Length: 261
Image 1 (tube, one colour):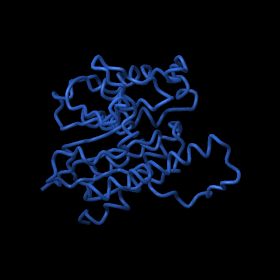
Image 2 (image 1 turned 30 degrees about the vertical axis):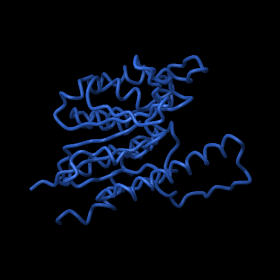
Image 3 (image 1 turned 45 degrees about the vertical axis):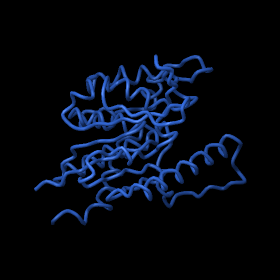
Image 4 (image 1 turned 180 degrees about the vertical axis):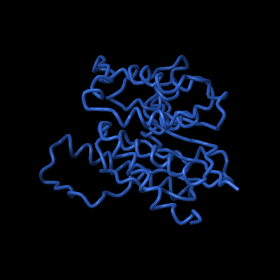
């Protein structure tokens, strides 16, 4: 019998490309993913998988160069966010189409954050592209999404970087991909050499790591695949081939004992 999995895909910029490697490992080893819950980059990767286009997304990302990543940046009025975010989704149409979430073959949930009410916004119906656009709206980077109901939507990772609590198939094996794992044995931070922006970034990342850990402790997924938070920068999509391979490697390290050899 195939092992049924609810897969929770977290936020973390380019680190989220590792989640394609995790999906590849799971499918290679006989796991049946029948539910995906994602926020930010996890909502995009998850949608591609649910539509059966994760291999196409993997191949497209593996070919990205720094120049091509820059071309995807559609600059906006900096008062509202440096990037519009529309060019990314328009390009994604080459990989997978915009479908109503309720018509997808697998259970799919995307999560954004509403800054007006300071609560999660959960997408389980409607345009998957609209859901992704709201879920990836990194504050100050991508233009926020304002809805007709007065919601002010930004990246789901602001309030819930690893949305384990929105899994519906609780009887499944619940596997969460944490993109805020402990730092790998790379160059440690030298705090006396950081500038103000770097300190702000490190403080934000520390807050995310703590918030993610609290979510893991509270909702207790079956397994957590920890991706080191310093494995890449937020825009390092030109390193996608490396990141996909690392995702596969970390999945094997965490879950390999479940596979009968």
